[in-house]
Image (cartoon, rainbow, N blue to C red; front, side):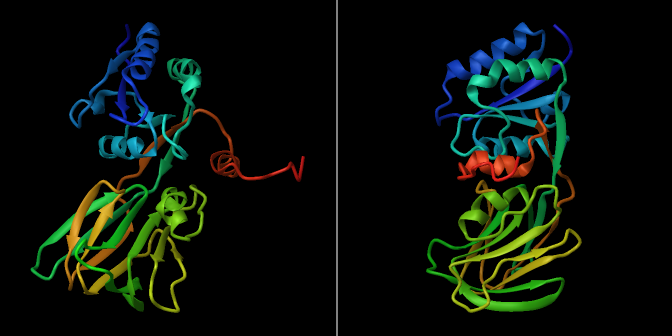
Length: 275
């Protein structure tokens, strides 16, 4: 047994039974690696890698452990699309072999930092790897939002949701909301209104030095970070988003281009138009 330690983060419910986790854990231990099956913020810093057994949602949970200490995340997909995952369940032995031989690279992914300034003077901070969704509160049908970039107000409208997304998140909620797909090596933020009552509702793509802004004019809203953490934003609140102070590191096992991942994950109908 070496001093190399691998953290395991598994989905507690969806299709990941104890057998799947124990099989991967056994393969790692048989290869001489130590395993931390229940990592926390204190223990994960001593790990070489966080191996996620689950889908993209589980990877977002692992990112909460990974971000502050810079430990890369490698996903074995037991979810649906699994856009952030690197391997399928039947590839687990090959994944373990590549981990043992250190045949993996690191793909830094930009995050978003947000601040919610409320009318009572309080300010709440959070971050996201995929997106921050400014949604109407449960008691509101819509909320009125004013959006801006770098201190310049651009438009206002009644809306169900406004998304601040990263390139990584552009294939998630942003994609479902009609936003553009952005290649992950592009450091950008995307502002996408969803079900807005206005003429100017096109998505906006800005650079990493920009600041996205949203003011809650009327109605109560809430900012949901990666669908996991929620900040209340009552009427009169302002939400700002900037490039995150820390990236999340994803481990990669191959050099398949992003376009190839799009074809594979979305099952796109291509017919080899160019050799």
